[in-house]
Length: 492
RNA sequence: CGGGAUGUAGCGUAGCCCGGUUAUCGCGCCUGGUUUGGGACCAGGAGGUCGCAAGUUCGAAUCUUGCCAUCCCGACCA
Image 1 (cartoon, rainbow, N blue to C red):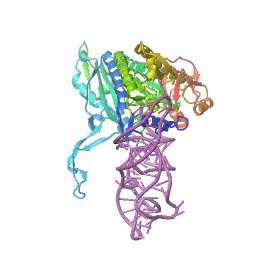
Image 2: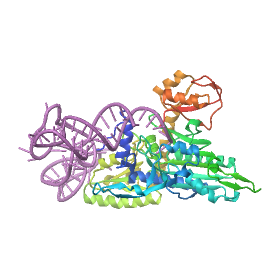
Image 3: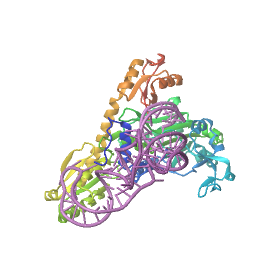
Image 4: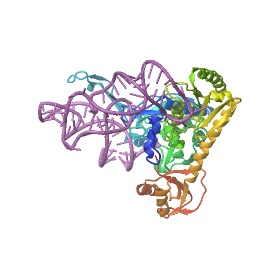
């Protein structure tokens, strides 16, 4: 019992940290607010990245890479964007160290190596990218420009949490330029749909597509679209954003194009991103008190095979059988690991792979081979069944698909049960305290009211759902007229 | 950045109040052997700047001060 996990009921935050640390996804580092992503966690990110990258390319985007540093003068060009990020920027002011004359073996910043212009470590890359686009775009023939980059960014957060909020994180950021407003809006919505599809089909995590209120909008955007997910503790998590930037950045960086009539106009822009935060979302969406539960489509190991044997003779017999099975499973596209490490006994391995969230475990011993079966256990329900060795790969593929949809349905059931209507202030307050989750309520549409509600309850408007029904009502705080419900929640 | 808590081996801990030989125990690790259908057992062994730095003292894990880090709760945010 070396790796006990704190239960969700006892301490949800500790449960989350235990899963990350004991599941081997990440570790704390020597740098404040920054984490080390360990191989098992990084493998999940690679799976996410590969899938998203494919989806971006299928929608016509190309990858490029822009610098980590942004000269301060460029950073401040788009005023709202600069203001929004200013208080969380790391800034490079010097380019050299030297030995400390007063303290042997120590280094100090060389005061003579001060930069003429400070370099901002990118918290997001609009500035450096739009400054570059200026040189790439002259004519409508250069549009649309559809570029994505995979990168790290730095936001100096006061309080950090593994994967959910770290000072440095990995993400992708798409930055596109278009000839018309409609096309740019179309792109914004298209990428939101890509994110929603990814979240639901691959992460098995239901999301609500919506638009942010003005308070929650990305600094420098005209509209921020988002996907919002619900975690098991009833708090909402913004899982991805897609921004319609209008002509703000084109104007700030003077990016004009000539249309067919040779008329000059500013281009229309979008940007969109998801980050390693998705791993935090994935962890919280499905896992239980025994450890991680990973969706088969993103699990680094989909099937683990554990041999059970007495003596070398049986071990050899099992090895031979597993070699064949392993080949069949691999040929069927299944990521399979054979753990015949002799340091640990089967029971230990069972617990370990449950902790790591491996969707399917196959146990195979001499008596199984005698009757031409294996024991198959699924992580999500802990059910065990005997399965014939004949046609095993086919059945495992079916099982993996079953698990993928089962955990999606479970998460969706939970999410749907936690969207509740509130028609007055008292109900709203009571729901926040007792039930949590999303609360659908009328709001008068003003930033002041939203701010007030946030002050009083810590709940914010997560989004205005895209598929919202129009419905007359009264704002829960002010009683003013409202034409639709919006979703409130406490959020990460 | 405010409030609270914690810091002793890779992990979890005892000792601290009331200073005194070689810092306790469990897990893990190494060697050898026996084991293997839900977290194995026996024997031997390695592993420590007691978070860091000053101070008090003959003597500090223990007392004092400062600093640092982490966690939790706020404010801020993806």
